[in-house]
Structure formats: C-alpha cells, structure tokens
Length: 155
Image (cartoon, rainbow, N blue to C red; front, side):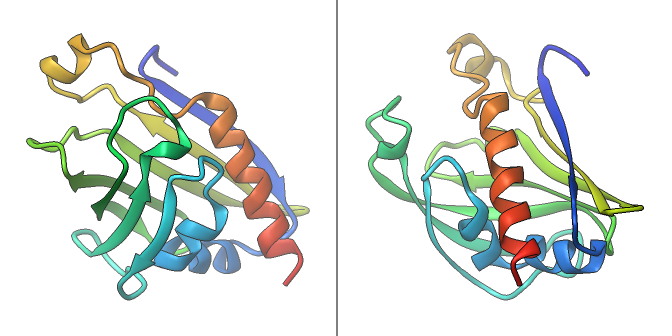
C-alpha cells in the first residue's frame, strides 16, 4: 500500500455474488455510504467497464468545501463479475480528478473477504498541490464495510 492509497478488509457472511450485486447497483452505493455525501442515485446496475450512473451528492456532510449539493457521474473502470469493481467520478470539478474507489471480493470459509480501496495516486498536479487528499479517511472505508456487512447479512 502506498501513501496515496488506503486498503481495508473485512470478512462478511454473504456470498460474493450477493455483495457484488449490491455494489453494481446505484442505490446500493447510496445505501452503504458512510460519509453521508451520497444522497440518491439514478441509473441501471452496471455490468461492464465504461458503464455509468448518476449520484446526487451533498458535500455539507463532510463540511470541508462549500460545494453544497451537486451531481457526479460514476464511471466503471474495472469489472470482473463477483470479484472486482472499480470506479472513478466526473462531475462539477473539471478536468476529472481521477481518484479511484473499488472492491475486491474473494470467497472465504465464512462467506467473502471484502477488500475496499481508495486510490488517489493518479490525480493531477493541481489537485495534489491543493492538499485535499485523501477526501475520505481510512476509517470511512472501514465504516462503509460495516454498513455493507449489516446490509447483506440481514437480507
């Protein structure tokens, strides 16, 4: 792991296919978000690299920049059915920042070992120089995994 990437893991008592289905769903992203920024989403579940959906955001949840409510497009950058999903976003800030979020899923004896990651190693110099990364702390990834576990284990 680099200084520009967080990676956290958690065992979740659900099959990879169940977890992956939630991660492919725009509403699923909203349901498990621990930051409070994701308010709602529009679009169909993703099935391949290049698929997109819209998320309505509220930056007031982080209270770090006065962006208020805005929209982002989630763009899938890696997709391996029931095993790996990754995305970046495009939205208000242009050019796109190019930070990446993703999940790797591996079957385990108790269900699935889920690895969540956040990578900002590819961001452009102006964003890097602004000193605002990481936007989401490592604890935010851990909290989202907790919400993911609660969501899929109680179905």
